[in-house]
Image (cartoon, rainbow, N blue to C red; front, side, top):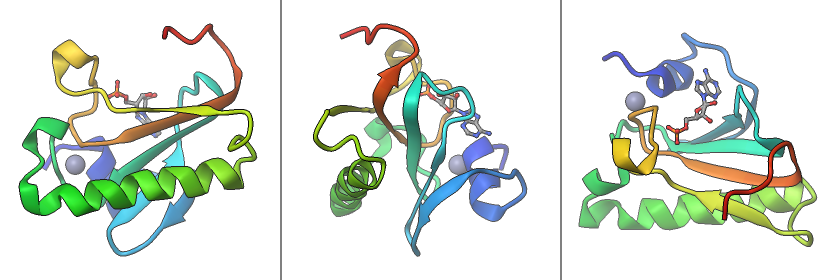
Length: 113
Ligand code: AMP
Ligand code: ZN
């Protein structure tokens, strides 16, 4: 399948990986919008948030828990951070493999919201 994030999971495309377990992987965004900008993904290919089944909801909880852990590791837990999920073209999603953005620290642009 033609998916950049699946290629990162398989190791075909290199990434600056900061976390992984059997279900989840997190790596630094290649085009960061802030001093911390991580991408957190399920290893399985789920195209968008809208494709998430009821059975996959606990996985979403794990992704959020890992975002919180990584925010602590990055030292932005106290200062605060954004966890963003873009869903579909209208939601600004460019890579069609479900992912969370963890953004915080020093912003390179003003945060939009
Ligand atoms: P989105 O607009 O929510 O789909 O965001 C996709 C994000 O993936 C963007 O912030 C990109 O900079 C990032 N990205 C695209 N390709 C790579 C890659 N090979 N390694 C790391 N991050 C990437
Ligand atoms: Zn994929």
